[in-house]
Image (tube, rainbow, N blue to C red; front, side):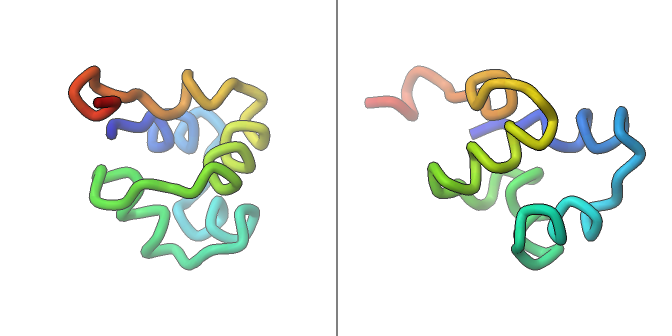
Length: 68
């Protein structure tokens, strides 16, 4: 799964640590999410998306084969 977290963090001048504190996770979790090495829970995905004022579908981009 691809994510636009890094792009949105940059727009809001946030570090991975800043976002991790908002979401309530470790900085490493944000790093893994940004690299596509970890899929967030629905709760985490909603929390991140709401923080930036966008929908989950705009923040997290699913490939068609990932939905099968």
